[in-house]
Image (tube, rainbow, N blue to C red; front, side, top):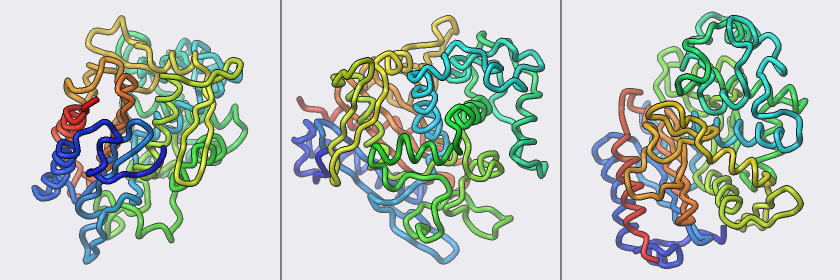
Length: 387
């Protein structure tokens, strides 16, 4: 990306400056209504991006830290598509696994209790039959004991017959990535994704000295304070803060860099043999990431055509899936994902558009909904497009 612009330069994004201000005003309104303590919105287009921050990253217990463009947020389930998905696709590109391979080929202990026929593709597309969630964290188990519990589970329904969003499936995918890459999950993410893409603020388990830059999530009575720099997802925390389903902390800028890889690959990647070199122009120079054209096409195709109402790619939520939060403003080819803490990343290749929304909506309690805010911001950004 070429760099940030101010709303009065919105024409570089092919957007109306007035309409872009209206999108920012939605964030201000959500803060004023105390739906969220604060947040950061980013719109990227035509190689440029505009970022807006409102409210506070931390607000309570006598601490008030304003949100800024550089605030790190607990990305929650964005971890699934920003880290786990690309690592699995890279392994597929390298021939180290096949998407239709049995999970039990790589994790033999997973093949028990009626899960012997579950495939990598089914885990990625949430059609594996695994339950949506399970309390692994409250038993005092070690990470290996928690993983063994998943492997012992019976499917909640027949694999391949339903699309049920499952954190458990992505925990398994994270373990597969570790085994095949021969290194810890967080280390693989740093080496293969964050460093090549210039995602300099992205990490698992951010260091203590970064705390003033991090948005706090939910108040935890056991801590006597907010979860601040510690992953909100209980299972991910029990896995040491690093898991295939959650644990990523990142800024809006870093997520936009990651999204740009998908945009370039989908639109006009520079082919080198059987790979696509997706190049991002950033403040600090260039970074490259490699995904094959076939991997990109696979991820952005529907893998649930036989399941009524579902429209899921590999990892990604596709247009008109029940989890699509964009309304009718983005194109049929748009795709994205949300995170429980109040985050989302959406990409529209037809419009060369990326929209990042980062909030810590659970700061006021996990029952607070930002469904309308997500919808309205995507609608407002789409309405701002002028070229």
